[in-house]
Image 1 (spheres, rainbow, N blue to C red):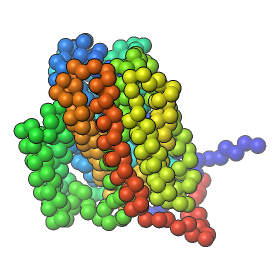
Image 2 (image 1 turned 30 degrees about the horizontal axis):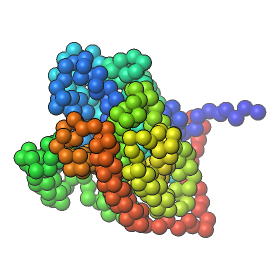
Image 3 (image 1 turned 135 degrees about the horizontal axis):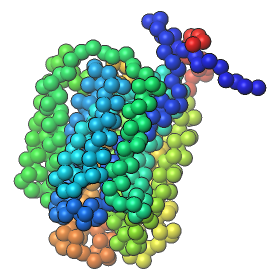
Image 4 (image 1 turned 90 degrees about the vertical axis):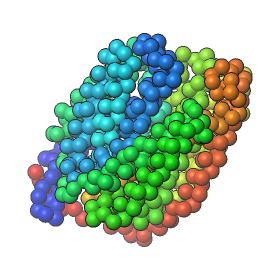
Length: 491
């Protein structure tokens, strides 16, 4: 018997009707979030081909990645708060449109400068859209279990996106050309811009004004810190520009906090951090990417330098990691509302630590099946058990007026954690291999030694996730949990 009925409408307390959120709305939002996250790593495998095609210098090539990271990370808080005030769907669509145009322009680049400008514009578009993908899900899917499922899927995409970027970059570079790592965004972006106005609801706006002194100090402060971390990864922590950028970033962020404490309409309301689990979740979103960066950065080189994988095989090597994250994303929503994040994180942190510790045993004779497949699965399972619950924990109880900026803080912590982690790990690697190795002129054995030492540092960072897990407030399941009352009328 057919169960198809007319689409129901949920009656709000204000008496207005809105279409019940559907799978297409979720698909649009999640696909766009994945596109933005993937863009952070999809270029990595293609970098040698980009250098050859556009004549980048060795030093300038890193800015193909850094230009996007710096712009995206610096503007996330502003993008989140702007969505709260101006309209989240509006900022989401505008950001995706800008990102799509910049992707097309980057794919058509005929010079290094052209590509770098396109990457900066991509970062601006991503900062407009990214926080509002999270906010749209948080405010669109209001039934508690439905919201957990949607946010868990979004979190899975964000955590698996790094590995998916490497897979996609390898496939496109090997089968087509490096330009397709940018062109691939265009059809998805166009589809999202056309479909979102019809299928994604515009949540209630929260009138206010952008607090520009806070916006300026936050944007410049996070940008300066991110630049300092990037510069430290290539020039060392004692370099003049590194110290200047980090010092300036610290001063600006202290100024930002002082402004927020006095402002009537702060860019980042400090009430966001009063919830213990949310505050702990933010810390987890910084530490987990920092710990995982050794797997993405060094293993990408290891499978090419030692195992002699081509771009396609390099990308596919990360498939077990991405697949295990998706597996976890199917389990977490079913148990998170019953047991809370603490048991999940207490299971995931040791798995991640075990995977990273396993990677410290690699040598020049290791095989993929014998020495990499196992750690890949452990990192995917552990990372999924930590990452996937975090977004529902952070966003699940956020007031609707703060959803955009809460998502902005979440993604800012993720970006800062990944950038800081990479800078620390590269510094550890450089200290282990010496000047020749840091300059990229070492042999395979020396590279593997430096990578293993960096993986030990990753284990130390990941140990902090055990503290994070223990800091979560336990959730006790009530004896009888009634379903939330929702008035439903036929459309």
